[in-house]
Length: 79
Image (cartoon, rainbow, N blue to C red; front, side, top):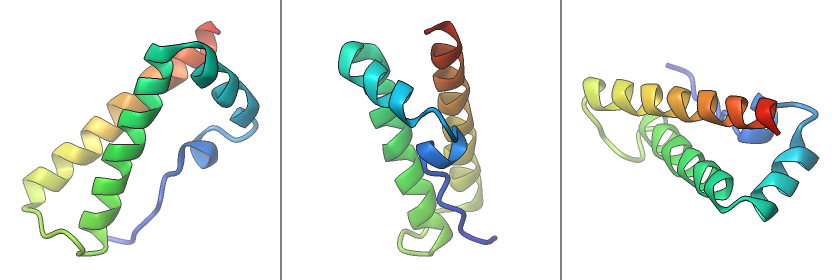
C-alpha cells in the first residue's frame, strides 16, 4: 500500500488558521490533534515498514486515525 502522509493540514485545506486557533484556546481540541498526529505517525511508520505490524494492527490504526479525523471535523464545524 502506498504511503500517504495524511497530515492534518492536508486533510482540512484552508482550515490551518482555525486549527491553530482552536488548538491554542481549547485543550481538548489540542489533545485531539496530538492524538491524531501520533496515530498518523504510527500508520506512516507501518506503511513504510519502519515498524513491522500485523495487517490487522495496521488496519486498526487506520480506523483510529479516521475516527480522530471525524472528531476533528465535528469540532471544526462546531467552532
